[in-house]
Figure 1 (cartoon, helix red, strand yellow):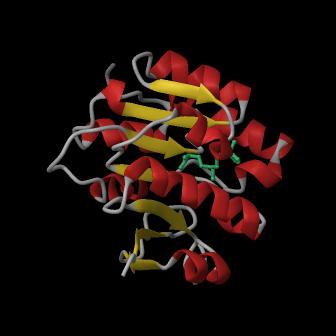
Figure 2 (cartoon, protein in one colour):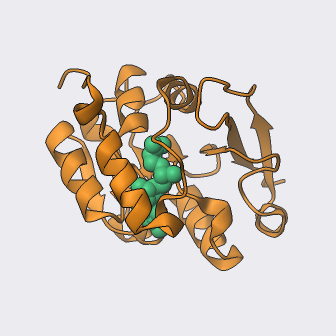
Length: 194
Ligand SMILES: C[S@@+](CC[C@H](N)C(=O)[O-])C[C@H]1O[C@@H](n2cnc3c(N)ncnc32)[C@H](O)[C@@H]1O
């Protein structure tokens, strides 16, 4: 599937409509820019194969960046709650595995050996228990070497302080991506098992 172009194909009108209907779930002014999506995808290791799990796929900006990064379409498992976004994803990326399900249900897929989990979820706006459920499930699907990639517009790491501490997460953060609306940073979390 070639790269989409144009405002309609960008999913922007759909995104804005869903933002108005579901502000607490969409929680972004616009889909991620190409620069932010590419920066997220860069955190996915290229030195081994295996599934890549995407959470909160929306209109597929990060999905496209994962494909551009060299991840095979059939290796991507994308979770999305919103039925209209799911329909768009399935039309745009027919060979990507798009699951119309909450990220909290990722474990039910029984995936193992994932090389990364890449999240566009509004994680910090979720209760700590839900954040922990999602991040725990992500590391179960990846194993100890996995990386959980999440962007944020805010000044703090996009997993709550409490969850980071309980789970022993370490992280590195990217430069600020000014070309995004609003500017954002990408965090790559790893689990410190020592
Ligand atoms: C900030 S938007 C990001 C969309 C897209 N990844 C991007 O970067 O442009 C958040 C997306 O997460 C979805 N979402 C919110 N809560 C979710 C959940 N618990 N499970 C799966 N998707 C969820 C929303 O429907 C929305 O599409």
